[in-house]
Length: 346
Ligand SMILES: *Cc1c(COP(=O)(O)O)cnc(C)c1O
Image 1 (cartoon, rainbow, N blue to C red):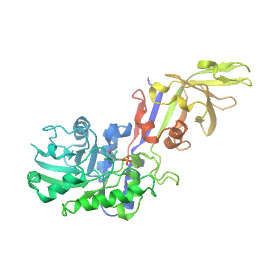
Image 2: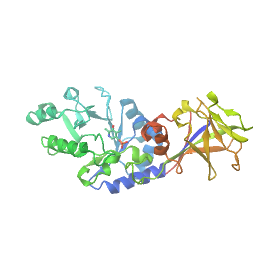
Image 3: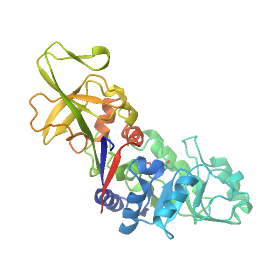
Image 4: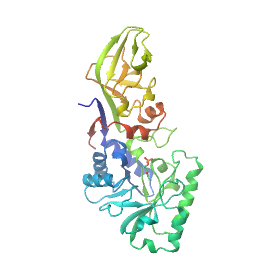
């Protein structure tokens, strides 16, 4: 039995998607499910979103796309953002990142234009060349022309408007093509960043798309660790590796069965709080590979076998990530394969 439990509320994901649909009034809203829906599990989340009316899904690789097609069945678009593999996109919509990738491909595609990320996508010059001589586009049906914002979570960042201007200019050569611009944070940049299809990931899973402001999204999951043992120690005794935490009074220590091998960073030492039935208490000592220790002195009801909540509404993934000097995206996608994942249906 795993000692880590992720409880994932598919109804909350669907409500977040609907919320994003309301905000993105200019067009449809897709769901980005790469990296197994940011670690939460692509199949149950995708089917809940499909049943709610979502028709567009994005993944990172052909393998992810094939697995998702198996879960979703025929119908919804499944676009593959990277890892283009000629001839391997049966039933999937490739996102083409270069003119070389046009060769030997026919049918529906998404064209990715690099408006300033300098990562994937056609440079603007190649798009201009295509506008002048569209022959390479002949066998392709362009579903969307998309671009990706580099700094959408910072509304004042000059890159946002600069990328938008470059993208709009690039699209002049393809005037009839539908467009796709915003990720989660981009949806909150205002109507100028609206397009025919937004591509949120993080916000669906409850991460805050507007850092520094109240989170408009609903929390989607909780992470709990099971208590393996309780131990009473006298004042003066230390806990864990390096003797890094010293009990200054007689203390009761609860050890739970998850650790850094499950994606909880060691940098959480001295910062993380645990919760049990509305009571809050600190993690103490170092994070071990498979274990973490909490000072539950005076906490009512804790027993071996009970579950201590470490990420949830009271201490969300963005907050925990910040404690460890990282972002919610990295924390989420690191959370362990050893966890049990329980889904509340929508
Ligand atoms: C990951 C990704 C998204 C989703 O980004 P979020 O910030 O999680 O909403 C959208 N578009 C592209 C191209 C991506 O790689």
